[in-house]
Length: 148
Image (cartoon, helix red, strand yellow):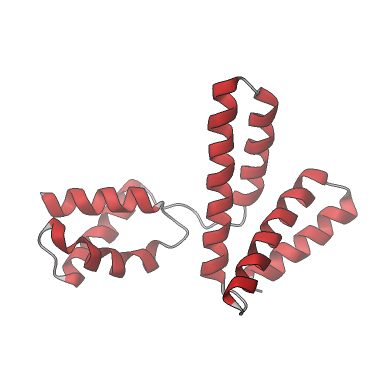
């Protein structure tokens, strides 16, 4: 079952159960997916949908940070609840050790030896960590490994 179909089925279930938080969260995600499909003029595969879900989590994390700055605890809790719902659809994140191992493998595969070849490493590495690691974190580890 594709991820989009799972999201749609879970939305229907949330509607039947009267779960407003899940219903609202899944509707926002499905509308973001639909918008991306319209822009692409084709349906999205699961990795692309995972990317959208990650962006949704990141947006809510930014909301939490901004709400904490202005003391809006009501918004903080709502965004945290939405993140928990979305994380159920994301694969388990990679640990620091797993990520470092994948970076080292990608560096060897790309035959990179200096920071100027970071692009070659990222091209090999990003499809492997899609949906399981943040791009900034991956980039920092690659930069560190290539510099040492």
